[in-house]
Length: 491
Image (tube, rainbow, N blue to C red; front, top):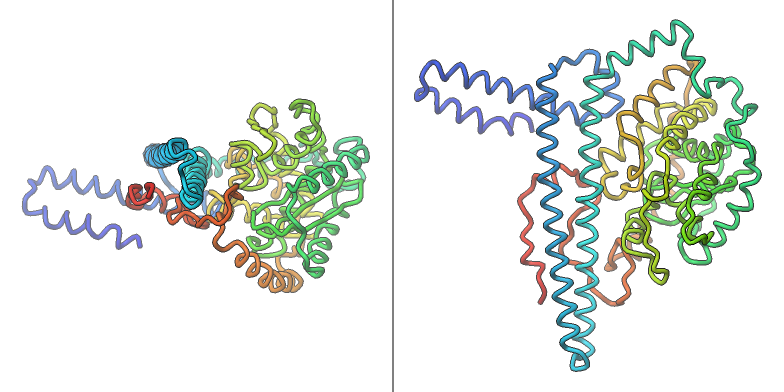
C-alpha cells in the first residue's frame, strides 16, 4: 500500500526532471525526503501500543517531524469533524422539512402518508444523531489515539529510563497501592459491604424499567465468564460476594454496580481474542468496586434527588461514558418516557477513577496469574479497530490515552516477574464457539430494524444510507469521497 501511494508522486517527479533547473532539483529532492519521512512516521502510528512500547527507544524522528505530523493530524481532524457536522445539519433540515409537511397535512394525510413521514423523521433523526456522535466523540477519540502514539514515540524512551531508575533505587515500592504482596488483606476503600443493598436496588430498578438487556440464555457461557470473574475476585481486594451476569447485547462493554454486581455484555466477549483480555477488563471493573467508585458517583449524582436516575448514571459512566452508543443517544436526547436529559460533565465524574481502576486492575490480573498486558491489548484494539463508535462509551470521560497507557505500562514494569502468565485457554475457545449461534440469532432478530435506537414508529425500513459501518477506520471514513447527501432527501 505504501508503494502504491507513493508511485504517482515518483512519476510526477521523473517527468519534471528535464524541466527543472538544477537549483530546484535539490529543493524537490528535499521535499520528497520530508514527505517520505512523514509517511513513515504516520505509518508507525498504526502500530499497536504494545509494539510501540517495545520499539520506541529505537525509533528516531526529530521534533520537527513529530510536530509536522501533529499539525497534519489536527488539520485532518478539523476537516473530518466539519464534514460530519455538515451532515448533521443536513439531516436536521430534512427532519424539519418532514415535520412541516406533517403539520401542513394535518387530518388530510392518509395513514400511509403519515406513516411515511413518521419513518422519515425517525430515520433522519437517527442519521443526525449518528453524525453528531461521529463529529463530537468518535472522530476526536480516533485522533486522540493517534496523538497519544506520537507522545509515546516522543516521550516513552525517557520515561522508560526513569521507571528503570525507580526500580533500581527501590523508589517504585513507595507508590500508592504498591503493597501488591498484601492484595486481599489491604483496604482500598472502607465500607464495601454498605454498597450491597444500593447495588441490589439499582439492578432491580434497571430491570424494572427495561434498561438492563436480558441475560444470555446459555449456561456454559454464563458459567465460564463467572469462573474467570471469580478467579480474579479471589485475587483482588473485593470483600463482598461477586454476582456476574452476561447480557445479550452487542455493545462492547462491561460495567459494575455497587456491592459486587458485575455485568459483561455479549459484544465484549465477541471482541476479546483471548482469556487474558477478558480477565483484564473484568479486573478493571472489579477494581471500580473495590475502590467504591460506583458508590461515590451515586452520591455525587444528585439529579432531582431521584435514586433511579443516580443508579442508571452510575451504571453507565463506570466505563468512561455510557453503556453503548445507543445509550449515548438516549442521554444526549432524553430517555423516552422520562424526559431525562443529562450532561455527564455536570456530575463531576472524576477521571482519576479510571486511572485508579487501571492500576488496581493490572495488579489483580497479575495476582490471578494472567498476562498483565491483556487489558492494554484490549484497550488498544478498541481505540484502533472497533472503538471509535461502537465503543465510544469507553472513552467519553476517560483520561488522555497516553497517560493511561503509560501508567499501566509502568505498573506492569513494577510488578514482580512471573514465570508463567495465562494468555489463552481451551475454555475461552469453547465459550467463543458457544457464542456463535447466539450472535447469529441476535443478528437475525435485529435485521431490518434501526440498529442504534428503538423507534417509536414501527414497520419503518432502516435508512438506506448510513454514516458509519462498524469496524471502519475513522481515517478511511474521513478520507473517502464526500458523501452525496442529496440522495437521502425526502421522497
